[in-house]
Length: 320
Image (cartoon, rainbow, N blue to C red; front, side, top):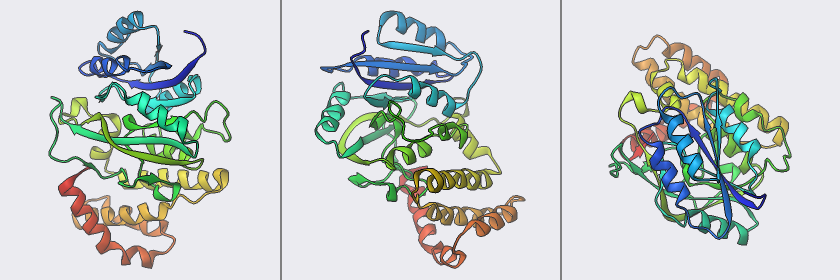
C-alpha cells in the first residue's frame, strides 16, 4: 500500500473468535473509490482470534495487524492504533459488531468531504442478538437521537452514535491537545473520552440510514469487559464519579470547555438512591459520594422524578 490512504478503520480484538470473521468480512467488502486501511489490535487474546486475524492479513494487504504480547486494556489499545492511523478519516468496527451496507464508508466520506463544518458523522444501527436477529429493544440509552450532535449534548454520558457507526476526521494527524487522556481517564471505557475530544473540536451529523449492527451478548463469556464491569461491580457508582471527574477536569483545564457532567451526576443520584433502598452495603457510601459531588444538590434532588421516569422508559425500550 502507498500513502494515499484516506480512511483508517480501527478494530479492537479480544477473545471474539466466534464473531471476528464476520466483522472482518463486513469491512473488507466495502466498495469505495478510495484506499482504506484496517488497523487491528488484538489485546493478547487467549482463543483462536489471532489465528483468524493472521489468515485475513495474508489475504488482504490493507490489514495492518498489531498483536499485543500483554493485555493493554481497551482504551490503551485503541489509543495506540489511532496514533498509528494514516488516514484522513477514522472509522471503527468492534470485532463482535459488523457493517451491513457495503457503501457505508463511501457514503460517510462523501458527506464529510462536502461538509467541512462537521468533524464527524454517525448513522443509526440495528441491535441484534448473538444469532444476528434484531432484538426487541432497538434504542440505546447512551446514544442521542438528535440530528446534529454538539459538545453540549454530551452531558457526561451521551454519544452521537454507537462506535461502529461513526466516521471522524483524524485529529491525531495534527494533535491540538494531549490525547493520552483516552487511556488515562479509564482503562476500559473509551467511547465517552474520545467523544469529548472530538466534539470539543467540531459537531457530528447523524444520518438516518441503518448501516451497521450492534451485537448484544446474552452470555457472560462473550460480554465485553466494560459490560461485565458495569454489571458486576459493586463500586460502579464510585468508579463512575471518578471517571467523570477526570473528564470534567481535563475539559476545563485543557479544552477550556464545560461537558455538562452535572447532568450525569444527577442520573447517578437516582442509581445511588435505588442502591441505598435495596439495603446494599455500598448504597450509603455511594449516595454520600454522589451528593458531595453535586455542585447544586438541591437541583439534583429536584430532578429525581424526571430521572426516575427516564430510567423507567429506558428500562422498557432501550439497551443500557
